[in-house]
Image 1 (tube, helix red, strand yellow):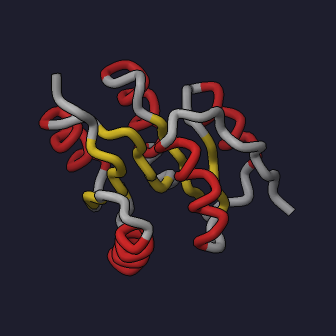
Image 2 (spheres, helix red, strand yellow):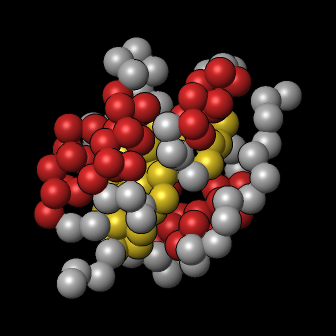
Image 3 (cartoon, helix red, strand yellow):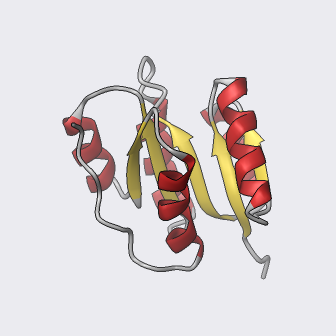
Length: 132
């Protein structure tokens, strides 16, 4: 059996991806990053991950589709959906579809770590913060 790698980042914004990758690497987390849900499908078919951090890809809806795909194909993987849109219904849908947690952009890196760390440890998700 293959041991899951810790974190896959799926984000179409190179600066955001680089920032998240640097931060998690400094936390001693093994990180791989891709820029699209299609690339995530390819990587997930090659190896499992404990946590997937994905943006919502709001214009295409691919972020939620990725949440669904992961739930169906690798159900032990924790998915954290990041979104820049003030859309509480998106959060409710994502959680109902199996997301571990949701995080509103912009966020503090500590807020991200407060969600990723328990996800890596297999702990329940912390309380989800609502939009202000």
